[in-house]
Amino acid sequence: MIDVPWKIFSQTGNIEAYLWMKQMEIGEEVVQEDDIEDRLIEDTNFKS
Image (cartoon, rainbow, N blue to C red; front, side):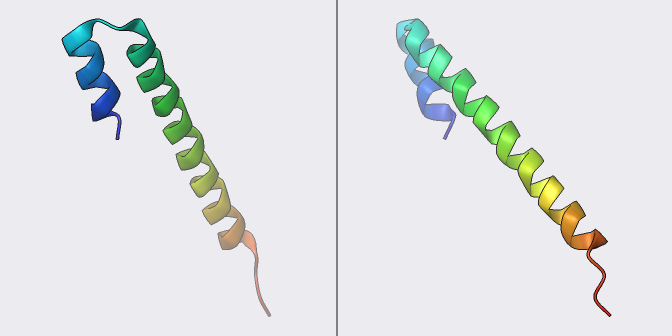
């Protein structure tokens, strides 16, 4: 999905497309961190 704003930026030099791409990258990092935290929480919940 990040390919679209990168292609727009590389072809046009539009800074807004570059900023859009960076915003998407940050959003992906947050999602990945949340997934890791969720897995850690699941692993620590012991069921008797």
